[in-house]
Image (cartoon, rainbow, N blue to C red; front, side, top):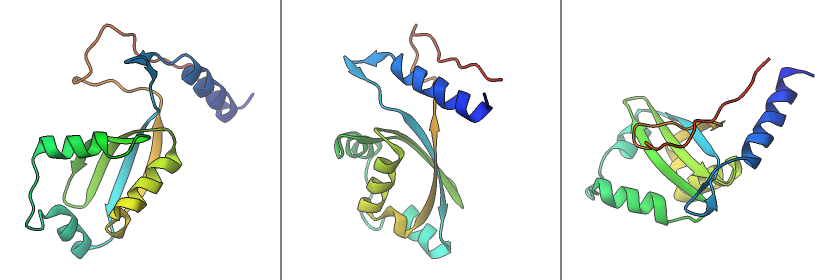
Length: 133
């Protein structure tokens, strides 16, 4: 059996055995790599446009605006940005980015992640593990 097929099977098995969080099945996690189209796009996206918002306001928007897509973390540098998404599917993330109009400023490469560990998510739950050939 080739490695890609085995990975798909392992990912399916992992999803079946995912732990529940607050009584609900956790949505898959995705890491997005965003690249600004050009310098003007970067400047527009990174400025407050005269309407700065607090960290709390960003978090409330990111968590409460769309039921099936949640942006959990955003990291923005001078030429590239990363976001941590929790969503029902890759397509749902892309659709939300398009709906927000963010694709006007950035291109997005999206990767599903089967393990999410974080200093901010400390618990006694076991980490996810996966076998590779």
